[in-house]
Length: 187
Length: 187
DNA sequence: GTTCTGGGCTAATGGCGTTAGCTTTTGGGC
DNA sequence: GCCCAAAAGCTAACGCCATTAGCCCAGAAC
Image (cartoon, rainbow over all chains, first blue to last red; front, side):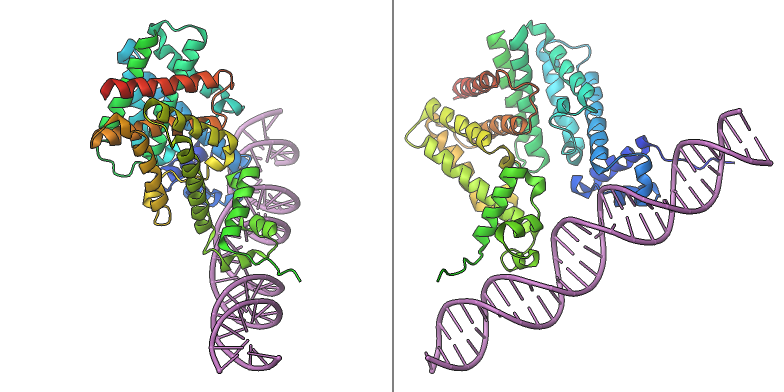
């Protein structure tokens, strides 16, 4: 006899992620998640503490997913090659999942649940920059600068903020080149 | 006898802006706006069509306010001096009104109500870059690049996304310099 | 076989946005 | 200076949402 597939926190987050990918963050409602998981709304509270906590789990999931993808893209590369791989992987991810990106936490370090994933992400960037031999605050500034560029571009692009999408690839190429030139200049 | 101050759309937006500045975008609720304006909630519908439209008006207000501030900062300057003034004014505005920044529309060109303000803003950036003599798509790319930098930094800073705020001024200085070097390099 | 626990359920509450329909104020036309 | 239409306020009500309380049932533990 088939055991009735019981719900778990992970499955609830799965449903939330699907919902966000399809209809955007504003469509993330407990009623919708319940419908998708085939359960009554209050039953979700056996697996999550609140809608806010579900959002936290969702943000964590997205951040872990991004880190995994970017790690795969960067591994085995160094220098400009690695930085390019990271930056292009970032944009590719957001292009594939534009609505999901708005569910990613911008301040993971301030959330108990997401802190570890946030640190892993930052360490990945630092590791990507390793071969430039940056020390102390130079490394921190360089990390912040890439983050500003990739996040700035991604958040504008994913919300349709660039009037016409024409030439966006070129714009991104220029940003990558600008960052690399800058890195080289001060390393 | 003092005439009872009647409500207008502008006053409703004023109240909404105060509310957002004090308690964040998620606190923007018709009930709260009604309480602040001394009116029953449904009465607001005599001045706005819906909460969504109020958000639109609010975004427009913020965008116009920013454009006015940045224009004042840039006027009378040219070249690197103008670009620096624009970029520092942008960050200063967001530092003064961190919560408000999240109410600013990221795609004003796709909103009937905000399109004109969005174009004015873009024209301001283009004008700021005028003295570099960029033509056609070069000007568009350069505009997009500044926007990515200032928005990326502002959105991360305003949501506390940089772990420790230490050295943030330096990071921003580096971003400004990076952009200027890049502009110079390709002009 | 009984018991205990975990995961589901229904019912109910309070806050929200929104609509309908009423009353009141107000300002312009005569 | 009065009248009346339109503007701007109100209360009542609806439906959706998150959340809580309290019940029930299945299945694992013993």
